[in-house]
Image 1 (cartoon, chains in turn green, yellow):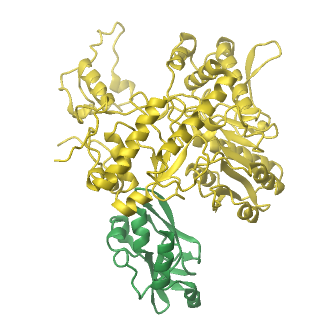
Image 2 (cartoon, chains in turn orange, cyan; image 1 turned 135 degrees about the horizontal axis):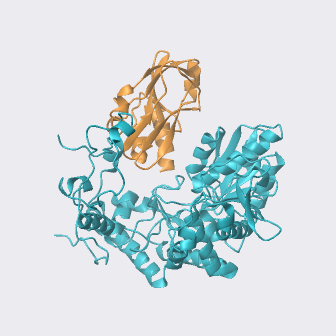
Image 3 (tube, rainbow over the protein chains, first blue to last red; image 1 turned 45 degrees about the vertical axis):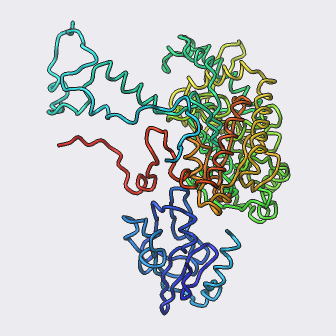
Amino acid sequence: MYPSDLKYDKEHEWVRVEGDVVTIGISHFAQHQLGEVVYVDLPSEGDSVNAGETFGEIESVKSVSELYAPADGEIVKVNSALSDAPETVNEDPYGEGWMIQVKLADPAQLDALLSAEEYEAFVSEEA
Amino acid sequence: MTEKLTHTPSHAPSRGPRSLIFETGAPESRCVMPPAPDVPGIDLDEALGGALRAEPPLLPHVTEVEIARHYSHLASMNFGVDSGSYPLGSCTMKYNPRVNEDAARYEGFAGLHPYQPVDSVQGALELMVELAADLGEVAGLPGVTLQPAAGAHGELTALMCFRAYHVDRGDARRKVIIPDSAHGTNPATVAMCGYEVVTVPSDEHGGVDMEVLRAALDTDVAAFMLTNPNTLGLFDPNILAITDAVHAVGALAYCDGANLNAIMGISRPGDMGFDALHINLHKTFSTPHGGGGPGAGPVCVTETLAPYLPGPVPYRRGDGTYDLAEPALSIGRVRSFYGNFGILVRAYTYLRALGGSGLREVSEQAVLSANYLKERLREAYDLPYDRTCMHEFVLSGSRQKRENGVRTLDIAKRLLDHGFHPPTVYFPLIVEEALMIEPTETESLEELDRFADAMLAIAKEAAADPDLVKGAPYTTPVRRLDEAGAARKPDLRYRPEE
């Protein structure tokens, strides 16, 4: 449920690190809590994001929630397939349901993120 | 086969959806046969400068009886407060007394034209002046506009007045603070008004966290918006300290009046230190709610803010007659004509029928009803904020989800089979699997018991036969709707078959 090669934040985003570019999505826990996702509002390529600030919104049949950037950087790629198939976030949160790729300004910021084990412990406390 | 229905609701519709009005009738069918004109005919195309459409529009062609049956059928599939209990939290779905309708249909009110000279609508203006004064008294805030057409419209109107006030003082500010338990309309209003939204978390009792609020307040904050009692149905005991802290940095305090039904004649937002309040006449003052309205969201403000209110405002002249005036620093009109005047007549009738002591009894009864239901349901469902509540309370379906895989949405759908409109679900956002229940003062003890019995029965069903609850509803005109599909791929318009 929480792949060990990913890092996580307490707003329930996951981060896959490949060099100085990271891929960002939301965790299995987050998609399960949200329920059926009906809309994902993402920024554009070239936009900058700041750690702890919102980069988009996700809407489910239950509610609208904000998406938070885990680190500073510039958006190099956006998963535009989600606009036609938002349900992908439910079906494959760690794969096809990814949201944005960010070129990091300061890779050291990732040190503050949680490991899969730490995130799982955090989630079981929340639930 | 499992027994799907424990009792038959009296309003259970016997028939599902029929055809659309566009699929009814025949090309030659007509409702009205107009007589031959007794004035000379003209060439329409020529009169319209050649703009007459060549093809007639695709309008339904039906007979009068077909129209009557079509809409009667739609009405029979509907569920309204006249069909049964409608405990939709935060919405105050109280009964709309028939006397309101009688008054609104008086020829002297219903037959008015908004362009009539002021001299010929003195009674209507008198009603508006008196209603504004009465609402101002309930609010403890003397400046009143009756123009806004709904609650969120009232919020926007008030925030526009706040903005004008700050700008006038040469102190334009950028931020508005909102607690995380707020109605979604609050941040939407803030964004519409051009301010930045700052959200602050609630404390463990569901109230405003004073430390967090003080840390967020600075001289760039234009306002703090609060619903009191809040969306957990809890009255904030720190309210005076909250509004003091807001005023200390030069910001204004706004009260979302959605929950006014809990405090009428008992406490007044003006006395709590709020600078403005909107009132939902379609909640608290028993005018029709839902179905697209119309509603009305009058705004009450302090004397300091009154000059900014939208105009024109009706007032009483020295000689006892009535006229319209523009407030000195008015933000301008926010609604055409006099607002939703027919709704104002209904609210005024309700106010006059009950009087001051009656309004207080309304609030006392609404609070008593909510606490009664809370006590009857507290064992069967989780109660995350266990305090004496006001006019509503929030349960959580977390236990049913964890132990039986039954979600709050399933419980809500199953309530339909038991003959009740479900409560508000998944709001406020700070409660997981939330069920927000507001019975209102108009339900009898017997009806409250029937609702509690249904909720207790569903908790048992969830434990004994989760699939029964997860498959609900079974008795409605349509079964479980595909809400995700409707949001992902909405089908919004009729397209004739080619």
